[in-house]
Image (cartoon, rainbow, N blue to C red; front, top):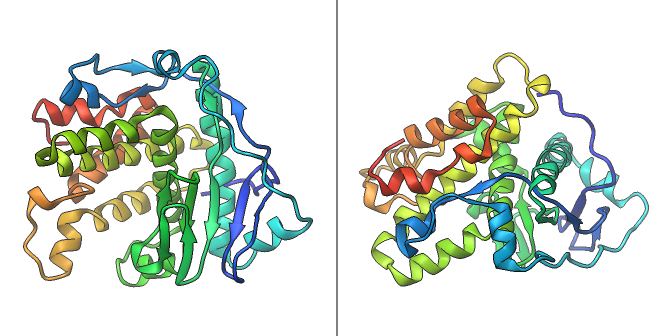
Length: 297
């Protein structure tokens, strides 16, 4: 995937050298979009399953969520952090592209947009959600709007999971960014509340949340078709397959049990990534309504 080089609009924190402040980044901006959030309410709360960001803004208040304080600047640090290795540069390039793709969608809907920060760490780090450990894989922390990555994970993807390629790695970044979108529009909070109220469907909701993030990753890629190269889509779909719950369980010598899935089967993850790729429409990523009606995509 031929992504443009990152610029100083992104926020990066590098804990690989013992921690440090965030570098770059303009702070929050007012965004919008006709983005439709998932129908958790239809499943649990009995509300309209298709809420636009405009509707959500009315629920939150006209001002939207408050933007975080601008991160302190330090000359050269952003470039240094993004150039530690090829995977670091790819991640920074992907973050810049994701910001440029998603911010206009929020702007169109009149919802405040706050870009996430990218946090690099090696083996052990610290997030607003607690310890960051390599064994956890890449993750998103809503408490500090951080996407956390130990870039050694990408080596493991290629060697152990047989899911290499630059687009596969970009898909991982785009998936975690999808969780940031869910956090900004309130989907994640709705899921957490629904899981608390109805524990028996907690895993079901978790799967729907993860599949929506896969779909959002596809939407990002679809809106950057001019950057896609031959073989990229296959790389992404292979990665989605290899990190499906059933495939991971089987690889670990366990019998796949759907009731214990938290991210979705390989078939589901591939299907929702493909849905985003084919439609380029975030409104098509309504994984909650599909699952509540018994669909299995």
